[in-house]
Length: 205
Image 1 (spheres, rainbow, N blue to C red):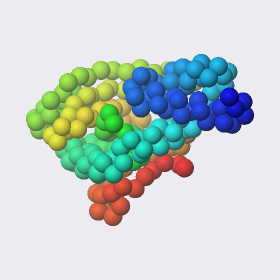
Image 2: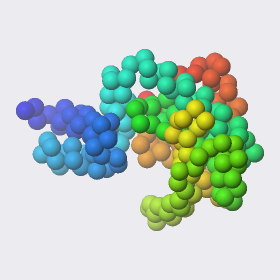
Image 3: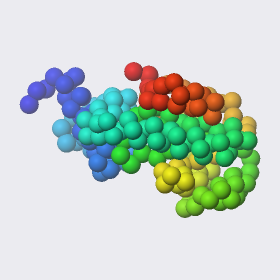
Image 4: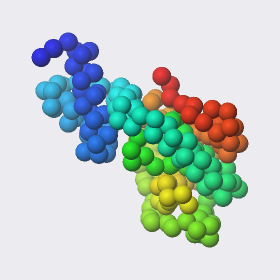
């Protein structure tokens, strides 16, 4: 076995990405720990290194159909965002970045102080809301509280709407996977993208 650290790190990243792609693990940290254990290593790749391998695996396995699905998911996202236009929705996650894989859903961020109002609007427009929940996460001493709505678009694409208070609207958020700022796409930006370059990617590398 090649003991070159860089080569071993690449193998661990590939193994972790495979575990995520196959759904064996859901979280990057657990996937990396299990992959490192497989190779008997005591160091871990970065989330970015795993994300790049995951992107390669998706491309290898899904090919042209992946690009077609990305356009379809972005189109469905736009339709949903227009229904919620009054709340300045942003497309985030893998559909924004262009790094979708099998099992990916559409992620939309909203900033509003009455989540129940959004649930009612979705139901009034034919959406079936399967689940709602408050999520509290504490990282580096900071507590982040968000309300999550799980539903499907009218075109049967799974969608998760992440809801935060208006006081968080201008707070910059750093992506734990890619390490850059999560900017997302507004309705106007997404419309322009679909007309001019529907497969554009938003990854830092």
